[in-house]
Length: 163
Image (cartoon, helix red, strand yellow):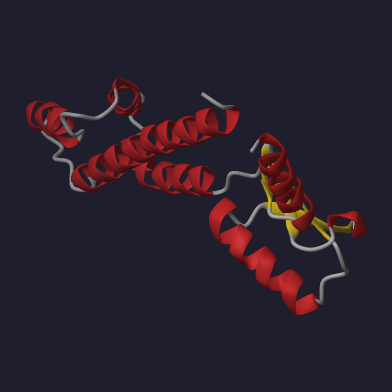
């Protein structure tokens, strides 16, 4: 398995785990908003508030808040967790190499397309390499898309020599 494939699977796992935890916390916060004052009813409501399939960490966290008498803080904690999960602040570096200088419109189109795939935290550099003859080479993280004319001509040459 290549590193890029592993990263795709790892990101999917991360998103699933964070998503499950966040959804479980939202459900618990909504159910606990009107928690009864009676201690027996309170204990029953607390156990029913956290969804059955919630990660154990979420169950333990809600129980710890209850033990500390801090369940009223759960909605603001959920909001902060949601913001934290949504703001993955690690930038992703990328480079676009072209045979000729790209216009501002071309750069914006490429940048918008790549940010749609890799997220808004993409930091992209544009460089020129006339030896490409035409086309682009796009490097993002450890992924490379080489759609240059130089590479295509080299592939044709290899096929002709092999045949």
